Image (cartoon, rainbow, N blue to C red):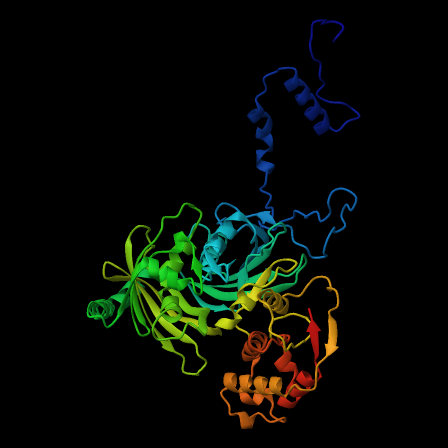
Length: 560
């Protein structure tokens, strides 16, 4: 056929003797279609339609599992071997929805049917965090305000809720059950990073989100807990209804305090004097100085507050808004007429709940009212509720804000510690454990030191040097130590409030009330008044008065 019709473009057979008919037809139909022949496919398939049937396939299930395997090497020599610690995390920058001046990197995050968790790491030497801490100095050192933790808690809670409940409008948050164990102090040497880690866990419905903050002790996983708290959701309308029921009592009491000030029965203090008084404990930066005037009457105070505008839009709850609106409670204890700030300071211990039904606005007059009350357990602690009012309407409340006493003589020991290897925090409230102090050789001296020698003595009693200094030249104490022993016993009697005849050789220091905190006070008093250097745990390791006498009588005098 090809020979007789030379111009034919394609020749296809309908049947072949050595092939299956289906195969032959399929090949040839394909060849005709490729040659450009217009085929009516409906006509082709019509004879077979009666034989067609629907094949039921199992449905595909989406399980949302992440099948990406994280490479743990450095893509160079180590390949798939871990280059650092076995379980080291790989930090990634926090997304814009989470990033604040205090929240920097995500170390870990996990979300599932039971809830979610996230671990954040931030560098205290970063300019953003350092600027926050620099506005709140104690003993000259930048100390991150406890109210800065509110921004961290709210930012992390919002992020977790957006992952567990996407598309759901987040209700107003309440930050409470806060306990402060240590303060976070910025290191003097900022050339090396100083990390703080924040952990938050939440249930599936985000009804309760537990927060904990930790100081990283080394490059691996060693940590030291700083604070804990719980973030919960609330209804601001119900809060307003609750506060409206007694707001008239607050406004009437505020008016009464101002009348007492007009009569000269209460103290009215201006802004400049307020923060001059505050400097005896904490030196606030200008953007933290929101109190304009304050009236103090016993343990009660009311302050007019105007907040500074925030220059950073990333804040959720700026610390320079939360701190000034609340620190009237600190003022009444650390500079008020009802306490003795010369011997004792009061530091934040935590609060039961913090609620705001309306956002705090900069440049607007707010009023803060507080009445602090001593604790019933004779611990020396004080607690009280801080109410925040705007135009005679309560818009916020900090419930059971607690402050704990700390002997002023220990301020430098706690708030101006030496730099550590990875940063330094301060244990504010020792209970059973005593913070690490100097390993300096215990010594006494009977000569009056020069001012420079006294400064050196105080510094070396606080600093643990990284390298052992040259050994001092020592000579035996003379036997006539009876005056030193008598002065030491009299000092202990004065600090513990017991009679001298009670302090016999068999008397145990724990029996007369010498705990870890009083032990540190005695160590500082011995250094300042008796020129005797003792390590911080001396009175815990030396159980009786007789042991103290033996130590003083057999000690050596260090010639500096």
